[in-house]
Length: 247
Image 1 (tube, rainbow, N blue to C red):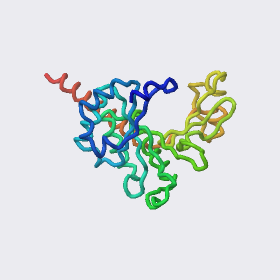
Image 2: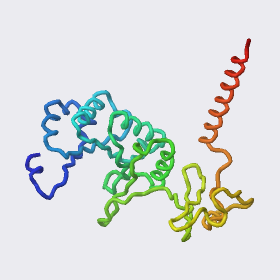
Image 3: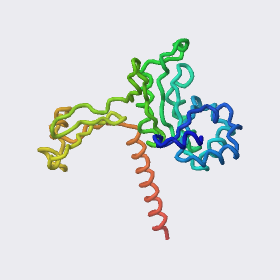
């Protein structure tokens, strides 16, 4: 560590290791005391499944975090092991709770002998689509592919840009809602203004040209949840008013 820290061309030291997962008892107070002398130091570990988040592993990661060492996590996407969106969400939530930042979901490499673990890219995109809107941005990693021929790590995301024009870009959120976003230099929201009533027929062209501002699905989980909260709040207010009117 002293030799690395002495190199003037290094801005920081990053250690990639599975030790916090498979040998957490190795993360001792003595080791952490030594490591904290060499900031800026980062550790990336590799939890691949929620069952790996044992009490011992949690204690090891928290010991590192308490020493001011940021800990990130690279999860390799593995067919039949963690390629389920709900399981991945469980893993990421557990990581956040023990102060480990989800960094990458990593497409399984083109390595001889692991073809049975590889998933199609569409599976990783599906998982990212599922996570968006269900988790804090702190808990959403990048889905990356280490491209062949020296292409390097390429981030892969669902397509949230539907269309664009010089004045507006049409964006899609995780629920399928389409929103017209005005580009700089456009005054207001195109020819209709911010408070104009939407037209009866609305398509992507109306959004891209600024003639309307959104296309929203009739029913979404988020709006249903909000409406239920509103109805519950109204019912409580009515009950409180009724109680206040009692003699």
